[in-house]
Image (cartoon, rainbow, N blue to C red; front, top):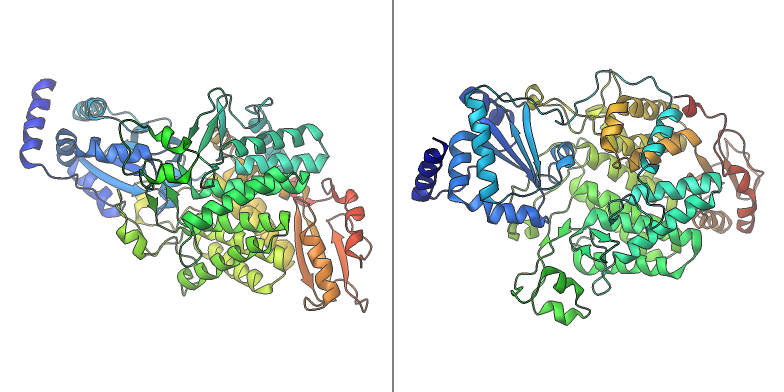
Length: 608
């Protein structure tokens, strides 16, 4: 009987030859599936993904697949970067994520990666048979929804759990968190190792962090710059896709490593990543495109994709063309880049890194800041229109947590590095709107986007890592603004999302959570220059602070009031336990820092 159905499907699909009738993620689409008693098929992916491209050009072009999806399913296609709320929800299954739901939107199966028609068609048929016989079963691995209430665990206990969870999978011989190789997704985890190494003056942790940074050096493209997706220890091979968030990770890692060691290899790593970003990924406005595929347009059978990227001369690659670039510019990814470029400036003193961060931030604000005070994730541009895209480029007026939290993080990084109150004011305003639109006022934490009418079908979600970014942003803002309500909200945000089951399920994808917890538990180290930013002596003190390495550093200018007016500029370095004596010479900063290395023992965040 199955064979007969498949033959009929093949004949029918070949006869009319239409495309898959993709629907959008919307209330109307879910209601259509429910009212028609049709299963839902959801494809989530990104433009720079080779596996997604294979699925699009081979499987979704197959007549039988087209017929089955159009006739028996409600097919939905989502760009994971244009819709980061949905992308984050299904990121456990990488790209493409192939999700199957019952008509009531209950997830019944999820598949990681592309499938050829000969593998995909039997899956469709089996699910249709189960649906016909009422045998569909809910998938136990379906994405978690927002927890009904916050955990009562102290933040220090959550921190210790996350530390253990990450340390269990550390590769102590070669760095990173895998036995097979190292991935350029590990930026926050590597920064977390540097943080702990500094906090406890631990040489072993510092050595592990530097071994991981050395892994990033192995991922560098020495022809065009930038880092690849991953590097495999045994074979020396690599995954050549280049994504913008991975370049941000590389900037973060190289900046930390260089500032700790002054090893020129890491400064050269920064330069190679910057070279790639400026030459290939920068828009005319100074913002950054999202990704580059690995396959050039004119590759012949004689050469593989790996051969192409192994060419040591640019002209050897150019004869086969340039792999396509996705020209979409996403606010959350650019927020990551801005914050990473600021770290590169702090580590090296190279003013060009700061300038490109400032330019990107200004252009994003001028183009994307809505009248209501929140940032759009994306807008239509000439480059995006001319791209050959697999999925709709969503530009709807919808506030996403990732865009607000990451851009706010970039703004505060600029404030830390410049002392310019413009950046603090913009961050303050953005955070207040983020709270107004996205916070769960009852239980704490932030939803991935405004809860809308699709929540009746697919439960609202508070993403762990994005909430961690938001929590650290809130905490840092509480120090700058002296408004402790933000600190309380930061603590509550972590407790709202860090349920043990969720933290355990996320596994290695807890780097931002780890960093946020370290900051909240160990507490800030505030560098306050009391004096006018236009005063040469005050600026010299501030420049000395910018060049000083301290993972918990929050730096700014302040008028006399909280600290006395000494008639000349002075620097005070404080944590919740104590402050240094006033420092008037930048050369004296380093010798006052050692007592402020460890955690602040009296800090309330340690108690949750």
